[in-house]
Length: 169
Image 1 (cartoon, rainbow, N blue to C red):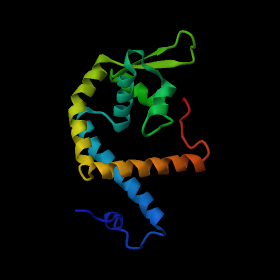
Image 2 (image 1 turned 90 degrees about the vertical axis):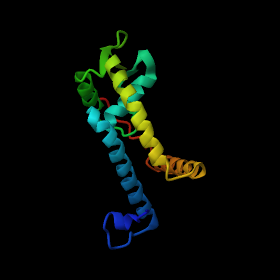
Image 3 (image 1 turned 90 degrees about the horizontal axis):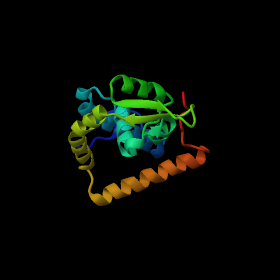
């Protein structure tokens, strides 16, 4: 059953514009999706941001990536990526090493323990992806992706740089 965002957030007054309603709906939908995925991650003691970093590092292979490159690739960017990776290193999921050519650069790699954690999460997270996508057919998903890409590109155009890249902390 589909409910309007007004009903969902128990707002009695209409939005000031359709674009404002779309924005609030987008934020609420993203929050719902994050909470749903979080239910799968929580039993393993993993946050969504930690999961994202693990996926990025797994994709980087054995070479790993510099910390700033990890930050740039994150879905939900954070200025505290170093602290996030600190916590992950303490849990044994990642390791870091200083670059021998440039001591200012720190390379992050996923550990065997991090790979095992992702292997346990792959199937349940894929199932959540399938459930989330189940509300739309292929054509609708393509349209949704197109609309979101257009909005994201527009935001980046009107906001200057618009990437919101975090600075290394």
